[in-house]
Length: 183
Ligand SMILES: [Zn+2]
Image (cartoon, helix red, strand yellow):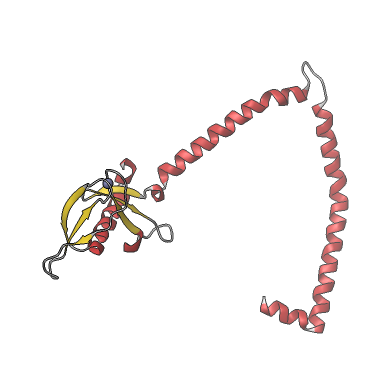
């Protein structure tokens, strides 16, 4: 774009470009003047066909066929959505692991990062905030209690980041094996 602007500022190039644009417009007008009457005749012949009468008027035939076309469109869209759902793992964005419900997002339509994984209560769907109940730093332990319905999965070894990473590995495995379609 910058190169084009530079050329446009140049007096010689600007003349060449403007001459080219004018010539292009001239060709387009000539082309349309040839094509337009043909197009007009085509429309006229369609119009004439619509009002021809055989046993039944063509316009009535079209009117009758509209519901059929609509039904075909609905069936086509339904099949398209069905195929899209069946063949795209990107619709797989939730599953239950380790007694918890998990949701995630895909970056660039394929990758999942730890920060894109969140856990929820499998009973009431409230988002859970893990509580650090580790006695020793070297042996992290977290609780995942639901503040809304009281559901608890108990204590899980490892920190939240590690657990989310395990979830990602399970998701990737399910995508590879096709198991995600049963989720
Ligand atoms: Zn709950």
